[in-house]
Length: 413
Image (tube, rainbow, N blue to C red; front, top):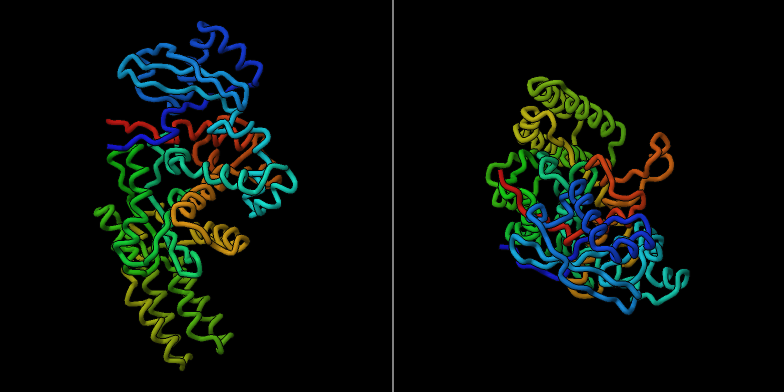
């Protein structure tokens, strides 16, 4: 059972303008027709039971924004939901068009003090808005169809600091999106299991039977134990990139030999089948024994070859990730933003919300001009993942996708 939290009962509606919205809520028949039209097109942003009927319940008035909103009651379970237009931020903190550009700049780590200097208000105002985005489910907000839940994942832990103490950020990625990020004070199997469980919980709200087919990880035992505990049938694929980097680190003074060895390893990686891959590894090992005298490098090469079976398992799953490149790039983004703020200085919960907000802003941020030069519409990781967007503006798109905090009702069948 999932405990309802603030925001789960708030439905965010796509409307073309504030003027259209005010006309709609003044006319119950037209507003009802509009709601049914939106429900037919985007049922995932509404609670289950909308198709069995609803009644207008009462009004909610925001004196802060001088805006009236309706609440509806579902006939099937008598649950009451508030209807909020997408031009207003959650908790009525401001108009979306006023928040759009400041939150866009957060993607580049622009400090809250700088946002206050340019856009007014005060740093804490922008900080609270940013953290509030992290209350929504990352999986439920990013993935709008359970059929699109990824079968092949990449996972790793980002190292960072809280009040000068090293902490870990278990991060799950697929299709260029961050689908899970948590805060862990330890890299033990137990702590990482708790961290990665946030992804599992949110994914199974979308599909109670969800289990990924493969997950690519590095060789850290705690990571592997965590994923096997959460998803006992998942196939672990060892990251080949991490293994090559460890071999490289073992021979810093042998630049030319290191380059040749790396070339042979990546040639083996590109093999068309497992047999050719193993053959390439054996050749690289024989070559290293003949040309490299550094014991540490040879030890890392032997270790890589002993783990060959953990690399070749990927050939059974053509769509599996063989390296952790995807999550590494996303963690580089995390690292840049965390560096600009000199890491975490507050409590664990604010750090957790900060990370989740960072993930959602990344998933919905608009690509640059070069990426969308061949597309008339604004593209983002979300639109690439789902194949559509709710709105041409990235923040409107995020707000609508996070309707009911992104906590879609589990679907059966």
